[in-house]
Image (cartoon, rainbow, N blue to C red; front, side, top):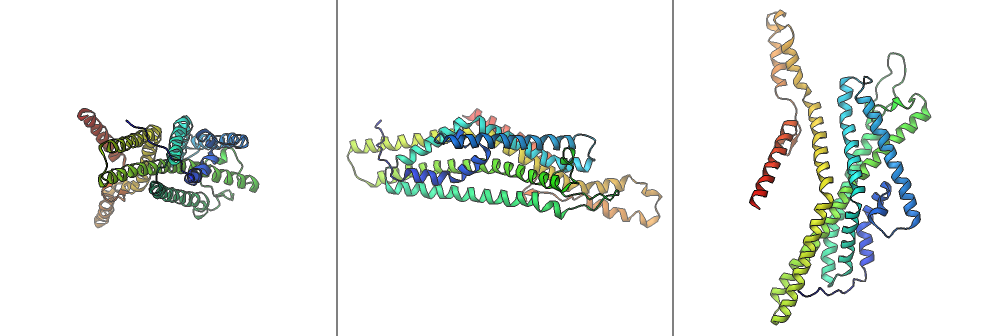
Length: 367
């Protein structure tokens, strides 16, 4: 098989910088950019070490405080259920953060392959194809960043004040916080300490948002690049059929196409090997959190059960019939659905897992 000729792309450095721009800023905040991109300065590595230590410290503090509040007698059942969602989110965010660090060599290898592909672009229209697919990945990355930060920061900064509780029986002002449990360590009645704790929660949220958006941006960038390489292979095949050439030249062109295709397939396999644990964590984490939200919504079904348990037979004649309306309405609780096709609940979550395992066994048997 003939080797693929290399004609360097004069703009490859600028192209790679433009593609990595969002990942560079997001991973710098997390302190792992020098791990995935070797061409960094000493100052960048020192700052990355500081950011890495700070991020893990605030995440660990958040996890410990919320866990103590949730799983001890400091909270009632309603508060425990309310905190399971944030607690699960920070736990799964730390797992994704962990695998971002563990898999840093795989991420670095994928970025090296991506950089080499941009450097060895052979035709001007090949670069245009790669730029077009890279732009799609950039658009997806921007959407993820805007969506996460708008929703997340709104929850951390606006929602606590919209749901502010009145003063309690001791005439003590209950200061709004996005997440409960920080009063274990901080005296929130003192304004400077309250401001510090509130800013600490916001910063912790930013770290968690960066973890999620970093995974999405890396996946979008890698998949967009793989699509660009496949599109170049398709273009080569189309041009090969259109051109009339000798048998020797045809075999050389065909060898180049096959080699390019194999490189694209190997890069796609590297993406799957790099992101598989993180994707599993993302799937399980988001599904469980949505199921918790679903649980919170369907607690109105307890109204019918409570109405049934009371001593309704001691009520006056027609008064007992009024309870039938409440019981009937509670049989159809509000549900969150995926496209109105399936409700998001623990039962359906288990069904999806069983179906996926059965499908995997079928594929293994067929292959």
